[in-house]
Image (cartoon, rainbow, N blue to C red):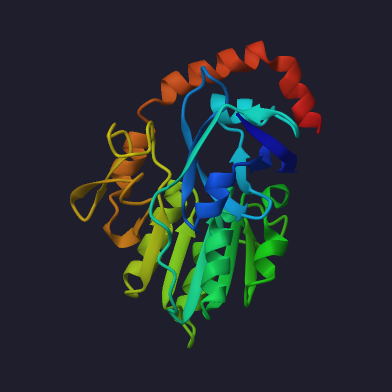
Length: 285
């Protein structure tokens, strides 16, 4: 069992957890993830590590309550425990001095992008960060990214905070500027990452995306996280999770991601009916 030493909401349905996981905290590097099970009967889900502290022996993850398992996870509080936390898994981010880098985080992907942005900053790069969210209430990790970014650009779909735009608008402006980026990292929803890839493709700017695909064992044996990159099959858990954005088949990725949508909807409905009171309390937190 892995004890939760801190649990708090960052925004509606988005919750941060600091978990006591000494071995993972000691080995974790930016870009890697864990696979966890909330309880002994739960499904395995991959979640990227947002931060780690080897001295305190903790890792930090951020979960958005969308499906049954993430909603179940978000009902846990400080002092509760998670059944299994396996990791660190996946290849670490390729951190080197590129020059000017743009790090783009969409939704909960902002928390995932932060450790890599920090590592790129420490490597001597000029880091420009772009945060994208539907509305002001869903903007997370703003202070953390602002501290290492030059500058930080916040966009919201509804214009309630920052610039009313999608993330590709300021990205294109940067590409068209005299000091265009040398490297772009995008982490977030599939449509956002796909749009970023298309924006940088014509400019020939190296672009990397992090693929949080369907996973079961996280070791490459089950084949559940198969993705097509450069016309070849790759496994997000062992070959990634980060890949060349211009080589990813996003159409196939979206198709595979929707394979179990109907079953997920049924499981979520049943869960919400069984846990209505607890979910209501969490919504008020």
